[in-house]
Length: 52
Image (tube, rainbow, N blue to C red; front, side, top):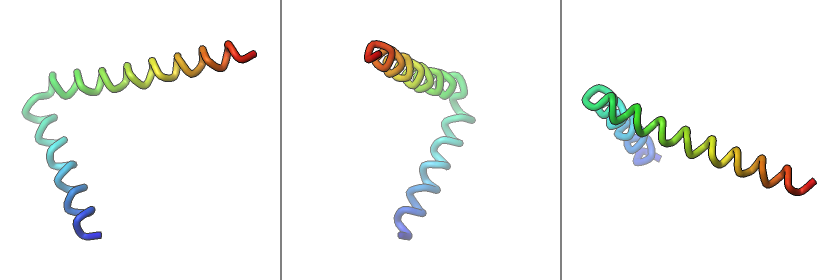
C-alpha cells in the first residue's frame, strides 16, 4: 500500500515537472490523447449506428 502511494506522488511530481519545463510538449501530449479519445468515440458511434 505504501509503494502505491509513493508511486502516485512520483507520477504527480513528474507531470508537474513536465508541465513547467516543457509546456508546449505537454500540451501536444494532451492534444494527442484527446484526439485518440475523440476518434475512439466516433468509431464506437459509427459501429452502433451501423447495427440499427
